[in-house]
Structure formats: C-alpha cells, structure tokens
Length: 226
Length: 226
DNA sequence: TCAAAATTAATAGTATTACTATGATAATAT
DNA sequence: ATATTATCATAGTAATACTATTAATTTTGA
Image (cartoon, rainbow over all chains, first blue to last red):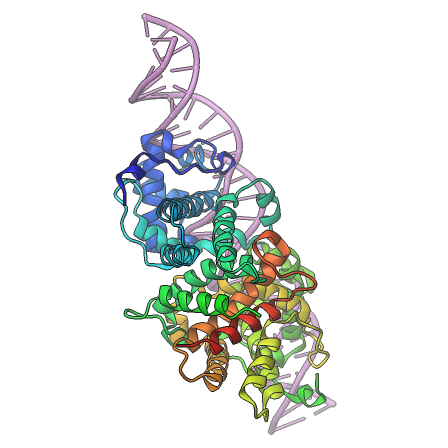
C-alpha cells in the first residue's frame, strides 16, 4: 500500500471501547494477540482469561479496555471495515470513469486480503479470516438495534453506501443499489467461506475468484436494466 | 399448502439428535417451544434450563433428545431447509419452461414465510425469523468441517444444488451457477434481516420485496452472459 | 393385566464462563 | 518527590452447560 496510509489512523466509535487500545502497549497487545487467538480457536472458545494468559497480563486488565468480548469483536470488525474503506476511497479517488471505478471497487472489496505493513500490530490476513467467520455474529444479536442506535456499525454502513453510490453512478435507473452493495459485501465473505468449507456450493476456487463472479454479476445486471 | 404435504415428514439426519423429537409428545413440545423461545429471546440467551421451565419439564430430559443447544439449532435449520426444499420440488415439478421454473423457485426461496398448517407443532413464521437471525451461527463454528463430514448440512447443500441446476437449465454458459444459488439463499436471509434492522442498507421494504430484487438480478445476469 | 422396560422428573454436583471488587505494585506525569 | 494512573494478583459471584444418580411415571408386550 501507499506510504501515505502509514500515517492514517482508523477511527473507531469511542463507545465501543472503555480505554482506547491504541493508547498503550498493553492495548496494542490485546488487539494483536486477540486477532491471532480468535483466528486460531474461534470466537466462541475465545475468553479474556485465555487472552490474559497469552499476553502475560491479567484478565481484569483486559476488562479495562473492553466491556466484554462482543465489544472487542465489534472493535476488530469496525477496524477491518474502516481499513477496507480507506483503501477503497484512496484507490478510486479521482477515477473519472464510473465503470472503471466500480470495477476497481469490487476488486478491492472482494479480493483476498494481503498483509499491510502500515499497522504493525495488526495481522490483516488473520483479521480477514476472522471477519469471514465471525462478522455476522457481531450484528446477529438481540442488541443490534440498540447498538446500531449508538453508532456501532457506522463504518460498515458508510462503506455500503459508498459502494451503492458507485453503482448508481454507473446506472441511475437500477432500482436496487443498496441491496446490491450489501449483497456484494456479505456475499463476498460468504463465497470465501464456502471456498474453504463447502466447495461444492461455490464456483470460486484458486483460479476463479469471487472478484470475477461479482464483477460479472454486477455489470451484467447494470447493463440489463429495464 | 397442498393437502398432500400433510403426510410428508421432513427427514433429518439421525446424528443430529439423540432421540427423535418427532417420536414423542415431549419431543414435539421441545421443538414447538424452543422455536418460540429462540424467536423471543435469541439463541445466545436460550438455555435448556429455561426451556425446561417453559415446557414444565426437566433440563435433563431435554438432554435426552439433544446433546446441546447447537444440535437443536442444527435440527431446526435443517427442518426449515427441508421444508423449503419440499415446497420447491413440489411446486416446480413438471414445469417445462426453465425460465418460468427458475422464476418460481426464486419466489419460493426468497419470499416471507407463511403459516403451514401441515405441521401443527411448528410455527413456520417464527422458524423463518430464527433462520434469518441464527442460521449462519449453525455453520460459522470451529466444528463445521467435522459436522459437514457427518452430513449435518446435506439438506441445505441439496437445496443449493437444486437451485444451481435450475440456473444452468436457463443458461448453460453461465460460469457461476453454484455461487449464484448460494448467493440467492444467503442473500435473501440477509436482505430480510437488513429490512428489519438496517433499512438504509437495502432497497427492500414492504412494497419492494427481496423476491423482485433477486429475480431481476438473476435474470439480467443470465440474459447477459458472454 | 401386570411386570419389565423405557421414559421422564427431581435433585445434586462440577467445571467453566463472564464478569465485579479490592488492594497491591509499578509506571508516569507534574 | 509525590500524586495520579495503569496494571497485576487474588478472590468471589451468579449463571451456564453440562453429568450422574435415583425416583416416579408411563408404555409395552407376554
């Protein structure tokens, strides 16, 4: 990624954490190691006690940063979507041709994640795997409406809206820009998951990437609107 | 639904349960009330102890039917997909025109659920809500590969395959029939969820149903293949 | 019909989780 | 140098997700 990105901080809604994990060494270790640990054992089995042991710190110290592990997950997924959003905006900014722009956007939002050295304590490849496996658990809860009211999902919503706007720019007659945008984002995670666990339910594999599938889906739809 | 359906039983993989809940009155009450309870309080807060109190039975008796609440969820989602599959096969069977057939299939698989009196102890409307909210939790686990090997997801896979085949029947050049089929099924649940909780991320609402969105998406894509 | 078998209920118990509380120690800031 | 803040260690609680055991009830089939 561009060097400019090195100075950019992903801004997370302050209500998600108690103390900003970016503000201390312990906080960064919590983020760094929780990503690895959730990747390894899954969100269900992950506990603050285990994380404390791993980072050689104390369970209660982690509770000073996050109210509970659900909030930590919200932090991680928000960070991921913010990171993707930045890449999207940075890369497509200044592109004049709406079609090329949308094509690029789909590429960024559906490709497999590569390491980004700008954030030394965050392993983006693992984080992407976490998002594939755990993202939906962050909103499929009884508290979703209250948390949504508190702005816990604003980054994700902004991202969908950006993509939706790009879709409309290509074809303003298309009636479902928001639905198509949300389908691309969730659908991409789903296709990546299927690729790894239910190969027969997808046509995406090594040489046939979700990017190609969604690109074809989107453009043939937009070219073919009544 | 047709009266014929009244005699049809949805066959669930026997490994999912310890004792078949269809085989006793208590088993049916477990299914009936767990659907209502998970609908009301969500899967996270749902416990066998609470269910026991509700059905005036004992926690340990429920454990005679299901190893844990995850298995119960697998049972409920399998039943739902089996029920949908039956409607799909029954309704589209004998339809000669592949396009009409696919159109009908999308309608069945993406519409809001209506009550089906054939299964008196199962509230299909609530079950549909459960599937919208909890389905992904049934496979987004560390155990997914092992459970898949044991055939816990066969009904869902068969359903995707049926839809995939119908897509290919309309356009055999289309490269992503399985991906499109899985996108329709998961995407439909997602659009229904967004409709209820993130209205700005979808164009589907009262008068603009997911069915219309997916119908347009699918047919414009299939008409426009290189 | 009645005894054996199967099912269900009641009670108790365990390990783990998801926290909260408190006091002690270490780091840092003024 | 001292006050403030951050971290650590320990302990404790209520709830969860079970398992085990025994008793009561229902079903069944000889």
